[in-house]
Image (tube, rainbow, N blue to C red):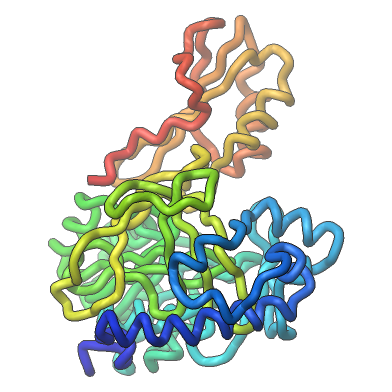
Length: 404
């Protein structure tokens, strides 16, 4: 198997700039054929948008813009250009399209970098329900010729048994869940030593967890992808930052604006996709990252970013699920006796843990637990604190996990 997915990965800076000068105006022109995107961009001469500086003059598109447009112009707000094979729902709710063409979400490039190929049977533990993650990795596995066991989420004992029975060689899913399967297999006396590769996303891959997998002989790498955009960036065998995918253009801007930050500074990730079916232009992810200087030692030449460094709006991902400030507000609104609430994200035993701190004189803890499940879609420890005792630092979500 070649070290590279295709020749695009090793282009020179000049070749990449030349391609951008033609790809970008073509995609802008394509985007203007979609009513919603045309209304958002306004009067723009597509032929003039040929480089990063010109791109930075266009307005930023946010998830809230998509959601508002979809409410008045169902189902996709006028931001798509072609009929899709699948329709998906993400929290918001936001509805996205999905195609079944080869490597439509561009996950194949990441899986190739992970070493997935025709000799692999991949246990795909991303959800196939509502959200597109399962299909994204299914589509990518097909692009590299791997077979897929569409396991989805949950039923860990069955997952472990199937992995042993099938001789699974590779895993795709959230970083934590592979450990849960491996631990369950150990309890059941099953041999999963044929698993040698893991491609993970949907949460942070902490160094200690990566090392635990390495100690088991499993090479684990992570990607950065979203339901709207597909793959944005991915680790290579060098494991030095994440390499930007060849099918997107990434900018790092001051959060809440469209203004690019200085090289190396942390800012919000803004993505323009070259997907002709779903031409999102300057789409704000809400995620923080920074550009890494230099070129990856693996030989891939595209820009590198530092991976996920938090949320620009305090939203964070816990156990693979986004938790947003507005959800915390909804929790407080359900209980007049709660004066304030704060979410703490930590790690316990290589798994995400969530603590919900509430300020109140007294409260029905069982009722609060039910409201936490209903509003945050997660379970967690609930702590009662005296009024006026929680920190006054503006945070409603405090991510205390270490990403170093």
